[in-house]
Image (tube, each protein chain N blue to C red):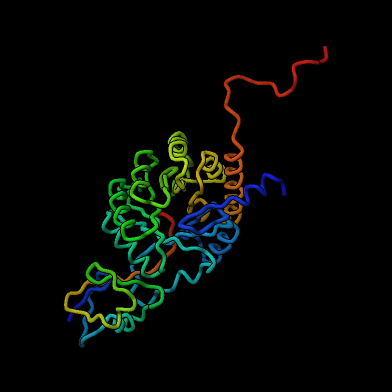
Length: 264
Length: 68
């Protein structure tokens, strides 16, 4: 193993006092089978997975989804599907009661077509949840001012989107992510939603994200376990490149070989 | 007495506690959470919580999901 890889393997992501050696957080939806989900989770090396809260069916068909997850995984309940601060707060409280965790991925959606977050409702919910002792990880539009407000509200990390949820388009606005990183050097930034393939994840990490959360890119790949491996490597590569510090971009060529001593 | 569970009306013939309702519905108690009239009922209060006419309950569990 090279020195560089050893160096990054010592680097850890810290959320709410717990250290994670993986910077990949993954979802648990859309897999074709539980077996496929488990093998993708294993291949990804992720230590945290997110799950959704829904009404239990009353026809006795309920089975415990959580039993299909590796018990070593940290579960991050989310408020997916909520369209108001009030519903998101209620969902978070229910999740905490069932899972005995203060962690919550806060999501308040504003529109069914784009699934873009409702930033105003998200901020309102974040303030309430932080007061109640939750460790809040909010999904929001990639906007610096909103990022600052969420951090001021006491959120443990911020989760700007790369592109619409499930779109697989990759980072649509790299400048915004870069600005958020540069202006908020101490914030924990987790890019959430919109990653489609490995290079998208690498780009997010090269822009300085601390972690990436994804679901569809892995679950809808033809071979989810292979894609999970690709994502794991891409995130490591992107992180290394960020830490290494990339060369500046130039408009014109710059020769790599000495100009002196060329055979004439 | 009628209560609403996840939006569905349920007739109860005798005084029923929340724990009894969960047992009647055959729900996996370990992995669910319950809200009664918009307030979470802590697990250790399920036994002592008696249901009243028109109570609205939300009983949730976890499902696969990433974002919305």
